[in-house]
Each structure stands twice: as C-alpha cells, then as structure tokens.
Image (cartoon, rainbow, N blue to C red; front, side):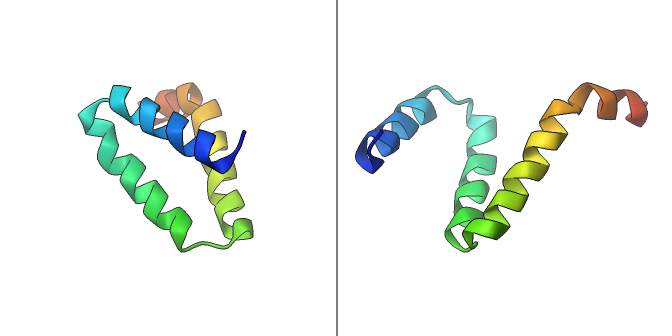
Length: 62
C-alpha cells in the first residue's frame, strides 16, 4: 500500500471508531510523531503483549 492509501484507510476506519476511543487514538498518533522508529516499536510491542494477555491481566486484577 502507498502512504496515500494507508492514510485513506485510516480515515475510513476512524469514521467507524466509537467516540470513546478517539482520544486514545489521538494520543497514540501524537506519541508516534515524536518517537524514533525504535522507540515506537517498543511501544507497539508492549501494546501487542498487553492485548494478547488481556484475559490473563483481567483475571489477575480480580
């Protein structure tokens, strides 16, 4: 995909995202603007780990 196509797909997806999530997405985008690729990859990896282990984390929290 070209950069233009990716931006277009992001815009389409944003139209369907619940309003409650938009603030979080904006924060992530602003973080991405100010991060190096390496730093952003670390953030992405942490997000992936947390989402993969969401059920486990919820059970541990109880």
